[in-house]
Image (cartoon, rainbow, N blue to C red; front, side, top):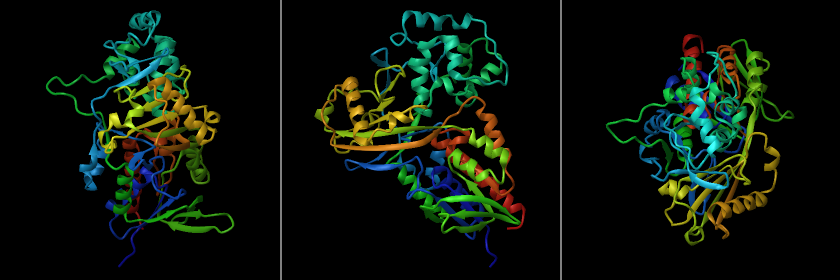
Length: 467
């Protein structure tokens, strides 16, 4: 029997595993697939831990269900029954030393004409937002600007600091002033390109109308048992040679195919394959691409990363009696608190409270704050507990704590990000593809989509030429 094609997937996170799973479907059982992961576990920045006896995600906790990738993948793996949705509790925001409901009627913090910002903004801030539609707008179609600068110029600093920054900081661990409009809120950019007369009008045009005939469905989903359930099922279905604790130091072209140099410099190992998928953070991709795709390497090297920390805590119910009945709280950047958000996990997700314990997860760290996260676990936990006392009156010691550090865990989508991505994806030679959160979105569905697209690219090349 003729040997099948050989493919190496560098990176065992959700993007790499999705790529490997798709490659198995496209190339069949004879393909030799190898997944190379530097860590001693799969999952990348998805990680499920035991928190007081319950599987608990300390990386991403949820995904957007309006995107089809994750529900479709769960169905393909026979895991549809593991899909869960949050309860009806609403989110809140902490700004101006008070906690209130997260305003409706915005597009990631950009007000539509239906936005109600009373209680969040001062009278002067409200007046600035109300006057925005009448202010002359200068916009160059196809251009890109820092979202924060645009919001401050049109709506004032309060809107940017108290609403947009907490919302987008939760997604990207970045400051709104450094995030590019076109990559972070593409629908808003498209509406401006189409001729919207103001930012408010653009937000109106970019916000889909609510369905009139039925109640809207859930926005988010999660996996019962944590993302580890999905990761393990993907790895099993892909049937790869999974090599953990393996560093890929170099990528080089061969006359037919590719050579990867693995392991320590003192004992290097060569792995020859027909095709490669790189599903690694942008700096690692830049390092591996420098000798085979210099322009793509430079573009990947321009993508900056932010670090963050998740502190997960479990409390006895009587010790967390003051916790508001909300799904969590976002924290404005100018608040005198260490946390940027707290998720009331057992309020938001009923499956996380089988024993009555109250489980929370607090997030710390925005772009440029890496030094503040270099405290030890005890100090970070103390900061979170102090903030919980302020936010919810919780002063008792938790019964369980897990501190999860994500050094360089989230790429920053700065101004011109889409141009960088175009350079990366279109600057690769045949037999090589990239995937991951640095491309088309940091959410799990977007990562799955890039993994599958990378698999389809290399599989198409293998089918069209000799293996």
